[in-house]
Length: 78
Image (cartoon, rainbow, N blue to C red; front, side, top):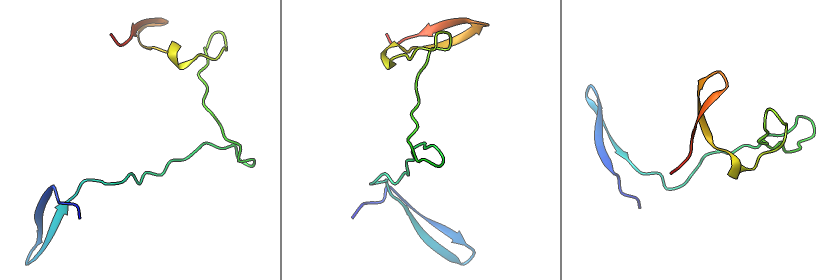
C-alpha cells in the first residue's frame, strides 16, 4: 500500500477528519482525438508555411519572438 507524503486533520467545530496526501500512481487523464463530424475521420494538424503553403518538417521549426511587425528574434537551443 502507498504511504502518505503528508498527513493532517481538518476540523469542523467538534468534528475532526483525518486526511492524507498521496502521490499519483497512474495517469487517469482522458485523451481525445479530433474527428470530422458525421464521418468520424481523424483530423491531423499540419505545420504549413504561411507564405508558400508548403508543409514544414518538425526539424525545421524554431521558436521566435516578434520585436516589430514582421521582425523576429529566433531562439534555438544552444
